Amino acid sequence: MARPASALRGHILDSALSLFATRGYKGTSLHDIAQVVGCSKASLLYYFVSKEAILAELLTPAGEGLGELDARLSGLEGDQAVAAAVTGFVDLAMRFRREVKVLFQDIPVLAGHPALGAVPAVVGRLMTAMVDGSTESRGLVTAYMVVGAVSVTCASDVPVPDEDLRAELIDGALRTLGRAPR
Image (cartoon, rainbow, N blue to C red):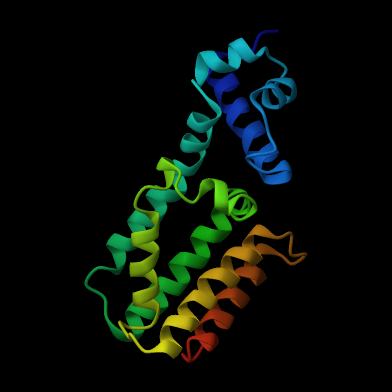
């Protein structure tokens, strides 16, 4: 039985994300994706003009989530901003684990990818919120440590339940930032 067009499109995206997360973006070809999906490369290109277009579509929800977090942080200060930045970032990293893994596997290739657009600026604002606007070396380094550690942890297959992982990531990030955990 033929798969409906929207289901095929979704299957292409899910298969591509799985392949990108296991083989890397650079290590995955359109042919590889078509094989896993069970369609021809021409069928795949009917839905997406390129591998880059697939990646852009896969990263868009994460980018939108980051933008929404950025908007929520606007106007918050002090402990409220720190807690919202840490909790929001942990939640995003957990929700988009495979996408984070893809980014970490191919950082040099993907760093300038158009799909990432404003992400560096938003992450900068997120880190500023994490340290309550501090420009001191300690604050800047700890913000980078938190963003890196949360991202790497979420991109890994940590054998703990998601609820525990989330709680430990938030508590650990707050401790790293010198804030009392919840």
